[in-house]
Length: 231
Image (cartoon, rainbow, N blue to C red; front, side, top):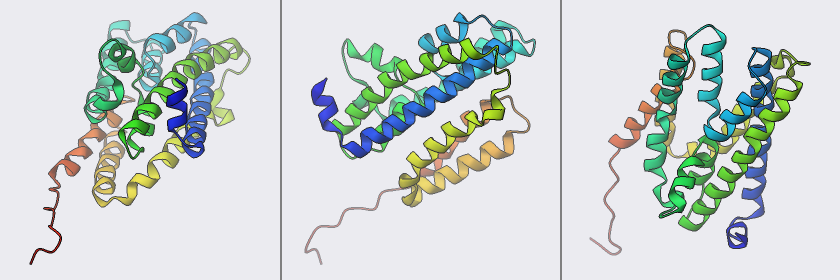
């Protein structure tokens, strides 16, 4: 474990800390929202530990709170979490092998993947993935527990502006990657799809459709390498 910590520099660790702080803050909002909607205190905490995926948990809570069936809520959450399929394909080296893989898969989320793909080599990718994933496993349910306890006092967490913290941190993480033209094109296409479909589709589905932006990157063909001194 000590070697994993030593693999990352202070800047990367500070970035992970900022992400985990944001996750905890949004977890507070999530727990408070769930309790104010009439759910028991233990439910957002349990979901935070078992599901460990904020968007699908918010969607699950929202559907049931609006009168939807638990089956529909579960299916919607599974559909939103389908984004983990391309996540897993993009970072197989960081997830681990053998007995570590089941735990590694459970730690897969937006934050751990974002921090992983920002690293320049395999060792740093693996360290960033496990540190971020383990941190989220603590910060998300922990934040949900705090939020659930204060949910009866602060019934409308939107007035605190908590929802703005998480996307702001993720945006700061992905900005360096947008210097690549192919990545920028894929992001623009995905963003456009999400914005167009958001007024018509349930929460979470536009983000899932936005993953089709990766098709732009897939169509890009790498330029053939040139040999030094070739005529």
